[in-house]
Length: 428
Ligand code: GLU
Image 1 (spheres, rainbow, N blue to C red):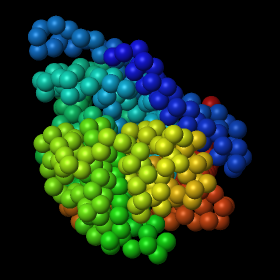
Image 2 (image 1 turned 180 degrees about the vertical axis):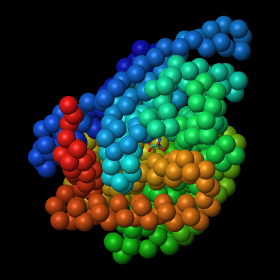
Image 3 (image 1 turned 30 degrees about the horizontal axis):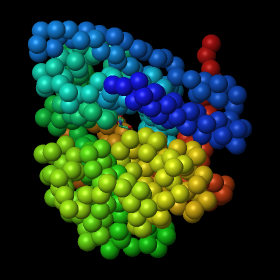
Image 4 (image 1 turned 90 degrees about the horizontal axis):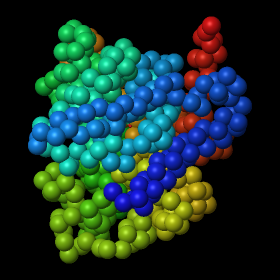
């Protein structure tokens, strides 16, 4: 990787962390957050950084850098994804871990916040190498994770297969007990995962979108939308929105930008992406080189389901959608948000819009601990109820305090954490 690329990635991660801290600081002073709660929340409880060697298929060893940031465990065990991507950095996982604490508190889960990952690209390695990297990372993490202590889950670059490997490694290393299954969530259903976990983040975002549309008197039937990112979050969101009668008119991912006013079939695109790892080549004649056209397209709403910091002060002014749904974590920078607010673009913020993933992770954890298996209808109904209730709580705070949905979400979350800290006290 070039120095320039390295510097750009470092700047982007710093920006995410800075953005989360800035938003936290602003709300902390707005609600006059208790000073000790303020101090505790402003830093993670633990930052683990580990290097571990792994044997490659050619017999050589490569050294990998892994992270686990445990931000807060006041409400319950640390909880959050494992990201395997070349951009993973300390600042990025610190920012994302803090968002997890806020997210779990907002949707009232008995869970804290964490995030981790490995700085590498799984697509550059064989399945055997990825398995050895994952297992060796789990060994290096040791008892810093555990079903009652810190529970990882999938994030960018990981999926059920990686979670199965983590669970199996942990089980053989430590517990060999039935509760070891709950050491990670997002496992395959065969290995104890919950039905509905894979689609949960995307579906949760759509349930929030439906509430927004209902509140605005906007019909989703016939509405036009665009989506950035067609991975686990974006594809499930798009499929569900399509089923509600809206038309996908633009898609952008790391491989290409596709614009088709007549509509792109989310169902067909999902099969294409599964086979080709990106939207490129789906409708070659509809591919455009000019990313500004994607951002500037007139649509009813836009779903951001890719990376952090994709909407910045450089493209925020182009956006003409009425609403942005943040399926990704931190996709809109603080500077971009000011521009969007000025232009009247609504935002359903990340800690609310993408909370569906961790909500169903919580359901998976509960099922594992009780050796229960719920059916798809039960999981979906419980997800829907939980996220819609959080949506309306945020909406009420936003209306009564005259603040944005994001500010209201931060207020709700911090108020909950503050109440628990004040009741429990800080010991000793
Ligand atoms: N990685 C997901 C997130 O950012 C899910 C975390 C989890 O399920 O623990 O919310």
